[in-house]
Length: 167
Image (cartoon, rainbow, N blue to C red):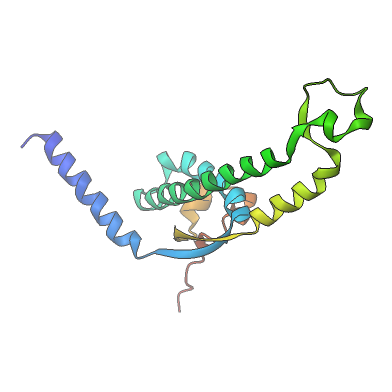
């Protein structure tokens, strides 16, 4: 066998092993859409920095979490666009007092509808979704090597568990 074939087989074996080990750490979590929106950027930053620094197990878990979160965010974005389009319209029709500020074909959200729209968006972001998340033990490796920021730790607090104290 060539070195390439042996390396390829070992790569598959390592991937299968990582899947078996980490799937046990995968839990269905109830998270709000807002938590996912806030955590998504932090998780992607961790993934970008971690590709060269973190162990393959940690990087695998981060990439799987990104995949699951992106699916939920895509679903939210479709609903968000639908909601905003329902509140959008010709501004002159919805705001007759704004004639000197607007052109005939200007579209947008009428000032009278902004508060209602914000409430609808807040309600959409408060929806809880069940999402498979691989939890990670928060280690010095993650904090130091990935140079994770305090704000990112806060945004991802649902993904990390603290290491058990030795007894």
